[in-house]
Image 1 (cartoon, rainbow, N blue to C red):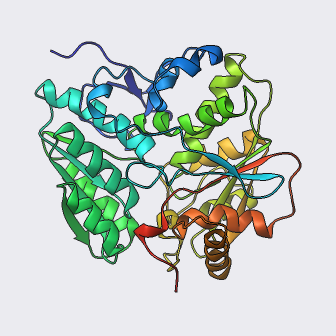
Image 2: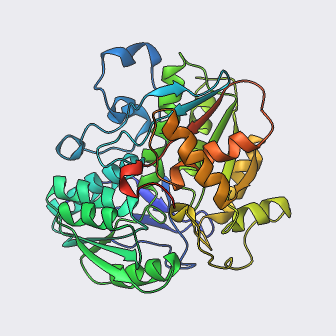
Length: 374
């Protein structure tokens, strides 16, 4: 039998569900779950002697008894200066070459626990590439049967990486939303765990370690501005969780502005933010963009993302395709080969007026996954 776990909770309906269940969304509104979990303060002085991975922040993470069987040493990525006021966190230096490892290891550890209890038979994920690769890798580490749904036209290098980890790939005709719908239909099958980086709240509790690492690296301080690419908002929402926790526990007295970046071609959240809207009224047009990883026309957590940016005093920026191309080549000339989605924040910062203080941008995925933009 499973021991009691942290509970899922719907932020809209306040419906609760045990995390030992395979239900992947609120049964009332079909919206994504949050996690009913309270972190405790992370003691900064003790961190120097801890394991060199994101699991060093154990007090901030939901209980994961099987984490040691799943971890690949993810986290603790370097922070390097790009200019006097802008530094980049090299999250493409993860085991699967993207920041999605931060959340995928949480999903895999939880799924392994369910499998050991006889609840779970298979894992299903959907992705434009990086999340699927991360789920496939950590699923392989955990010995789980994984099925990954991807949009037709996904980078062949990403597909090769997913298959190399032993996961089965289902290519879906249509856009990213069509892929998600196909995966959700499969997730409703008995014995299936939906390892969704959007719907499952364990994922942002993994990505929040991005900010804990900044806090530790800067000696208990935080940057003045944290810039993040936003499609489904998993990194931004994780950052917002960390900022709330650090402030609540008295570990920092500063509140960095969260600046969210979208591709101009697919920017429903930026449009809603600048219109003063609290949520989306419908999906945006699905236009082609080099930043395929953030080309999300109707993110399920749109309202949460908009609230988090406003609460921080931040804003939304958009970047053109030409700005993405230029930014990728500029970073490559600085020694950093990053995929097109991963350079969006650097493109935005280069084009926007400088913000006071220290700004940090993430470089989220390796250029080896997709190659140089045409």
